[in-house]
Length: 547
Image (cartoon, rainbow, N blue to C red; front, side, top):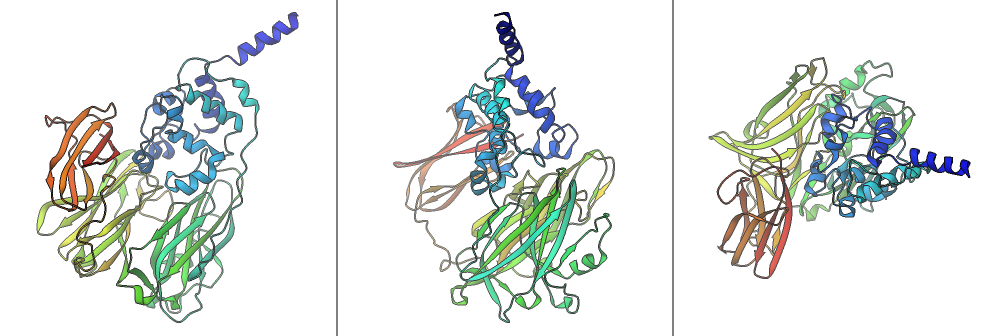
């Protein structure tokens, strides 16, 4: 009897701690804090520190720094019980058994954590799940620590290639090894067995986990005699870390075609638009992997180009690539860089942009792109923003955004250099970049024969930018004349401001909100709802104000 009582008391002592303390000591500290610690790149870029002193405040009711998760209305961890489980970005990031949903539905959310280590065990996940469902308290025993005895770990599904397109071409970058705690970037050149031009109107990519980016290049005429050997890996750096001069020399002849930092990528061009490619110079695949683990990992990529019939093409797309290599980031401080590019200098004719995204490295905390004009120095329209260097959003413009010969693009990038060394432009992940990529077609703004003059259905679009500070634009389609009401509410359903309440004619509409209430007073940081009502039609969306 005494022995039995001893066992009961022992279990009560060992398995009766505050659940949050168990999570901190048994999960965060051994598996997460080595990256999510003050001053690390992971902490700066994710906005999350998981050390004992601040972890709880860093997680609870905090909006994720990942732009897409914030737009989806997620919190790191909420306190609303089971409802918070389904709106938790933390749970999305650690719930490995939900692997296929995570990457198929949210590739822009990044990688499942912890990076470079085994997934959390089934018992660890269940402990965290029960804690969230219980309201994520800092104090109190809300889940049985004995769950940790279940040490089974979710097994990764087999990596599956893309299906070969019926009308197109598939490029395959064969499996290659990335040693432990190593960064590997390489090229793999292939030729296309056709003398004719090809017209690409869709691009898809899938990669094994661990990839930083994948890019497809071709070469221009100046590369004659300097083209790489087909089917051979060419590393930018040797395994001792020294640069490979032959690869660096070949890179000067490359022309960017497409690229992605998301593990699953699927982009279809606007109807009637295709990219014209000359296969005679081949295609060079560039893959960049960072291995943070103590084990060798394997990289591999499949990329599909889907072809369009020439008779179906109205506009030939061109690649937009704007680079600022004048980067100097002093140690232990924040630096903001600006760089302007004028359309008449860069392209020489008016253009219609339909895709735009940014590229930077680990020190980048914010990347903005503006539309500017040489004849109006006060004009500066924000057209793109990213808070996540590793998973920048891909902005699609439908209809395309028109820039005339006097317009330009200004890049503004903010970096926090937490290191003790000056950081400049370079190819390594420890270097920095400031690049805008996009797609456009030249010519005058689309006329009424190419763009529908009136929308065919009622629609309220996601605001842009989102998150925002302090101005965001709300777009909506009005197919018929009608009384339009657009109102802003807080998350307690209290009215903040009425933006529109009037009769309007049909058309493509927009209105801006400057983050003020009815008295024109600034409102506080947080999630807001915007609701449109037109007759019996009602639609509501979320937006995030960050200050």
